[in-house]
Each structure stands twice: as structure tokens, then as C-alpha cells.
Length: 179
Image (cartoon, rainbow, N blue to C red; front, top):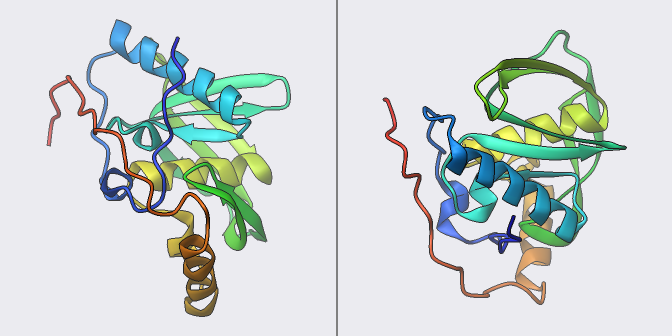
């Protein structure tokens, strides 16, 4: 297991759509372990592979005493209930902005061994599923803000001490992608 650097806002890899995972092999298992290790090190709640510069549809989360992951997630929304509250991101460290999300989410996908999984999330976990799936689609949470809030967020980002740091090299998936 390796703690990897988290890509920061402005890194072009964060705006790319991750490829579907087609090989459930040892490299995928290593990626999941590295994601967990990095998430613990960063003291975060969720982390997508794209945030490590790996363009694969995988994310992990730590909820209370649970650590879990999902590969090739697809989200469903059982109702129209919404939540609004502060949201942060390890790729936008130290900054939080009120972001509207759905309150209830069902994430369907696979575990790292290729077994089908379905996880129901509400409140913070539902927010996490939406946030991390957005990362896999190249969407950042500030994109979800209304124009005035986005303007304020961009101002805060430009004044953050981490802004403008050079990005590490992008790692592309060694797995073939099917389009």
C-alpha cells in the first residue's frame, strides 16, 4: 500500500472522465488499497481514483467504522428529496461551500473482485456517492454551485496557499477500455 499525492484543483486530470474498469485484477486491488491508505492519511471521507491521477471508475469511502469501495458505480435516486450543506474536497483542501445534493442515493457497481454490490446511502454517505461519482465524470463540486457561490469559491481557491502547485504526472489505466 502506498500513500499517493492527491491532485489539486486546476490539475487537468480532474476534468477527465475515468474509463470503466474491465479487468478485476491485482492492479485494481492495489489501487483500492492505495486509495484507502491515501484517504486515511488525508483524513477524508471519500476519494476517487481520478484524484490520484488514475483514470479508472473506482472510489473509496470511510463511514464511521466502515471502509468500503465501489468499482464502475452507477447512481440511482429513489426520491426527489434534497439536502443542502457544507461540502469539501481533498482536491480543494481546507475550503467548504454549501452544495445542494440528493438526500438518498443507491450506488450499484462491483467490488474489486468483480462481485456485484448495491449500497444505499443517505445524508453524508449519499453526498459522498454523488461527489465521488462526479469526480469519475470529471465534475468538481464547485461546478454544482450557483453562479454567485461559484464566483466566491473561485476567489477563495485563488487565494489558497496550495493554488498553483505543480501537478505530478498522470497515470493512465493499463487496462483496455471499451467504448
